[in-house]
Image 1 (spheres, rainbow, N blue to C red):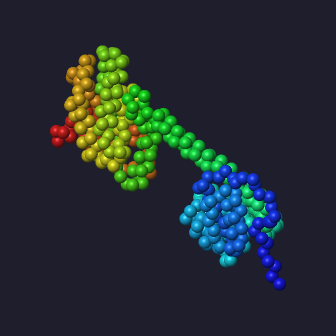
Image 2: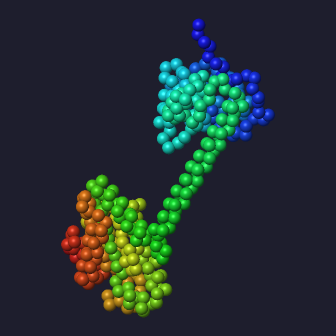
Image 3: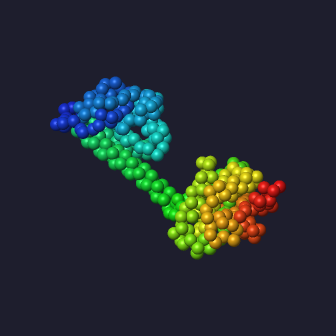
Length: 348
């Protein structure tokens, strides 16, 4: 003779004097193969103040509803036709990587092994049938508090991440010019080298130096010198038209440009345009031996980075090209890769 399954809810049982204070959006998925059990659990949950209650009679149906609606809590029977509740719990956990939905197992089984299997498969608690209504509601309250706490922690973590990003952006900005500072330059250059190597695309680095800037400061004063650096920063920012082009203040009167997907010829064209921009927006330089206006010199290096390429080698190559541009009379950009400066290119 087959022993009938235990009832879902133990009666009689004390009820709470008032429903739980839960938001209308709180959703519970009740999983049991017996319709009468689901009905009893649903009635008790409704009395506790829940309005949105989902039902499933098999593990597969429960998993489908879980993926479709993502309930706030799952009440899951262990013995189900076909795949059991342990399998359903494991699949639910795999369906929500990085997230967490409370799962309470319901079963007529009562042993340490059953409890262990339930926790190992992804469950958070275990109730033995018949379930006392007051115990069910207490567990519901506890899981709700844990879920609220986790959501607050997730929100706080997201807020902290956003604040940290803003702080990093502030830390990587030069206070005078508003350009990326040396710290940001180092990080971005390293990242762009990795991207260029991965994509097989050319990367150009330009180091720029304002010609005879010390005499400018001596003649005009440091306040005017700061204004000059801000204006140069504005002009450099203006020529970085593409989203990944970066203008940085490398230090003092030195600036840098990181230009992804820019070949050698494009780099020289860019440099000539930069020199021309200073002619169309002249900045008076009362102490320059090169003329009445401020000029700029630069070194260019372009490569498709291989495994041996790194930020230090590119900076050294660009710095050597900058030294060559100064040695050849300043007011020009020089590239070792092209063995040419912008003046020679213009005359070629």
